[in-house]
Amino acid sequence: MIRLWINGLQLLELIVSSWVHLLYGFYIFSTAVAYDLSLALYEYLKPNLNVEVKEMVKCPDDLPPIVLVHGIFGFGKGRLGGLSYFAGAEKKDERVLVPDLGSLTSIYDRARELFYYLKGGQVDYGEEHSEACGHSQFGRIYEQGNYPEWDEDHPIHFVGHSAGAQVVRVLQQMLHDKAFKGYENTNENWVLSITSLSGAFNGTTRTYMDGMQPEDGRTMKPISLLQLCRLGVIMYDWFDIPWLKAYYNFGFDHFNMSWRKIGIRGLLDCLLGNTGPFASEDWILPDLTIQGSIRLNYHLQTFPDTYYFSYATKRTTRICGIVVPSGFLGVHPMLFVRVLQMSQWRHPSDVPPPYKGYRDEHWWDNDGALNTISMTHPRLPIEHPHCFVGDDSECLPLQPGIWYYKIIKGDHILFIVNRERAGVQFDLIYDSIFERCRKHVFRKRPQILPNDGQQQSDQLQQTRD
Image (cartoon, rainbow, N blue to C red; front, side):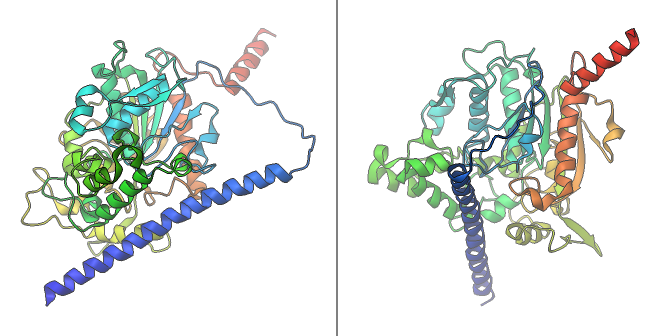
């Protein structure tokens, strides 16, 4: 009887969680459509006014771009109409790029896509990897790279949210390993800095709640939220509606799951788990389990000439030794239940722990999607050099090769999509990131910003006078 009661509660939780995520997805999609319609209407109806446009201060061409890399279920510039994944933060600097990568594809595949987005050419996932995972070796074609001059003398600042931070780390390791055919001169110094916003460095216990098996961190439970997600993604890609996929794409085009290519029989194979990304485990969730992150981190280094900074988010507090959500109104409705569940997580007693020394209580503090311990710096299987920062001025001048990290009060989506939720904190965080990239991170000499250059010229002229 008790077992039936528990199963009933689990089924109820699955139904409620599914509806909450579906409604939130519909809210995002409808918001994007409404924004596009209102913008189109405004363009059609606006009067022909002569508006004086002030000339903008142009950034020097040698100023390194800042690349914002989205996380799971995310999107880049050009998707979902005029909606911004980073809630318009890209407008704070003139040299910001927002690539559109696969929202559910594996960390490996996304890192490959990011390279060709910047350099240009056709995405090459690698012959060995593609054959092992059962997808096409080549993907999207970028006729013109978004930063084709990218090399050691023209490095880049990267800012990654959630899984996007791990994507950048994998990309940097690929550059070090010279893993891109035809680009034998790559190295880790193509990356000037990496800033992580709620970065998924060491996995998350939420993957197990959503449906990943804690035994191996690779396979899914037969009945779970992720199984429903899998079915929905397969059908979405199979129907292959051009205008819909142009609006939002999960990124599995290289798996060729369209009805035009696999027909009904291929669809059944995908649904039954015989083929496709979920069968080959070449998708994002296995990379976000604790075991999957350890497998990734085993090959990833923290390099001595790159600057690293991390913002870890936390939406829990301790009351009489018990970890609970810190406030009801401050947590997004989609994440509140998960904050509570993750703060009470217990690894199954009949399953070996994911690593030696694992303790549940270390993973209780969380932001509704990731555990706070996972976001500070890479620590599994080997802890990387790190330094806690209370105030930004404490860590100046910055030293490369060290993960500086701060812990911020907020849930996992506080600094994306909806700017109003974060309020003043939104500007404080992104302003500090961009200021650090422009004024405190450099290898050869300090960067001269447009206004700084003018001030230096004025000071030099006054000295001469």
